[in-house]
Image (cartoon, rainbow over all chains, first blue to last red; front, side):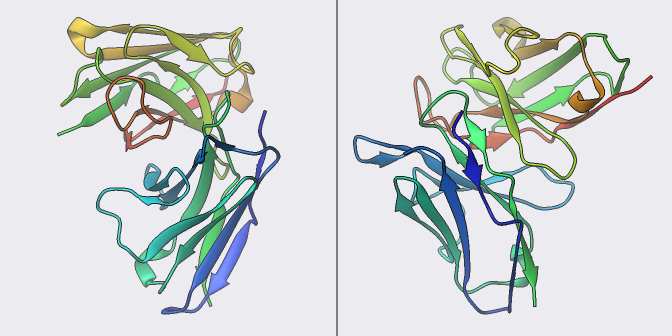
Length: 110
Length: 121
């Protein structure tokens, strides 16, 4: 299985930039597409799709969110961070079965 | 609009079988694929398996021996059955839908609200 590694937590100040990383145990690119996706989850809620295929913004998601990276190293950037962004962020790969998720990065305010 | 809703027993005895139903609206199960994803409290999600739009299925190899996913297109429902439950099967179970019809990207654009399943005697 492809393992996705995320840092457990990240503390940032409001209106600053948050950079959340996800490293995969295998390359998740194929034919120029990165099979990496990002979700936001607030307490008591279901995950919400933010970014698909590495860098594509999902419908209705503010442009403050962006995704980048390739191969085995990916980043979700939130710039600027707003109070409503306090949540846990998960990466997910769909390059190979079984689809796997990271353990999540909890975004906290300094 | 697209909606998915999970239902089933909140409490299951160890070694028993879990049966969950995902009732969908706003789209056709013969056009879109639906996956089951579970999440233990405080941990990352785990993809369990999926019902493809064409009726085929795919399972997480870690669960394949215990898991079965089926559907009733006339009732707009997808079913999950998993046997030999243990305490570490406790968590919130979600059904999710693919973003596009047919064979589309394997990310999860729509989620149900989830149903909490506790495995305990």
